[in-house]
Length: 389
Image (tube, rainbow, N blue to C red; front, side, top):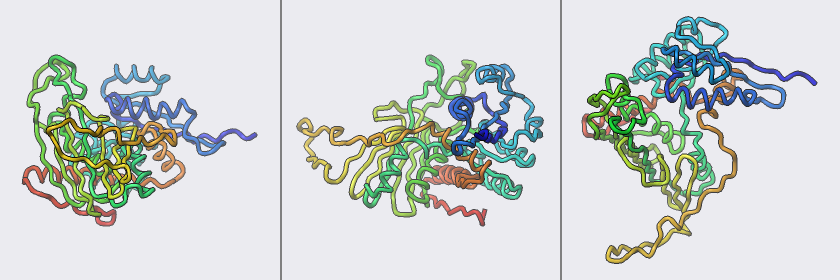
């Protein structure tokens, strides 16, 4: 029997000491893939990632390395980028550091995979896309929510024609993030400082762009209102600071097909719904409500007929008339699934459409959302095409 062919691929992982880089991209994605024997390409072939950890804190890097079997690490990004044994560069730094590092990686001939937003402006995002295209390197952006079990179930229902004609989408996202004075905050302080790349509009509208584009159709216009509901928070050193970035956004989107979508995103809400993210899709033949993992449906034939009468207790249990979509397949971590697709793209040339141009579309929507908030008006979202970019 012939030996199994292993495609070993080195990956420079910059920003791995941060929450997202460590938990989702290293522990639950690449390290998990390594523990499973690589990305299987059949019975006799696999892709094995080899991370090189990069960051600014050697103490944290050394601890993470020990946790993951002694992975190599360095605080010298230039040296990592010059190492030909690592042809892929991944970036999970804060947004304000990302663009310059990606430029350097492209110049070094690395394939690029990075977190969103890919840059702080559309102009810079398109520059990165053009640089990657000109250099002939493969490139991708994290769009993890597309592989959440709940959203994949929505896509399956849509493919089956369950909804009929979809006319509205409503999203609720967020939770109460503690200020940091009496209860420790769950998010880093830079998230609430505009000068450090913070703000929920640049963060979450990038997500909603790819969710809407991929599940329902291209976004053509946005009406957006931001707010800073909690003006003072406490940083990691226990010192109070003024929040210069918005912590909530209320946005309505027009979809090319005529669908109207509205998403409330907030770090200042208490959750009384099925999950931290819920998306309700209404159609002429049925409605579905998806959370991160589960999805509930109510078809036309099972829709109750409420009567408005606030003088009596409602005779209807509005939660009882919903059917849970059964688990028909096994779902893996969403970040891990996209990593596997990107590695197959780099090693085998398989299609991967979630590239830096798709990342630029998210930044474009965030910029248009900020413009809408500033103008207190609807703003058109022009189509971004590869040829024009």
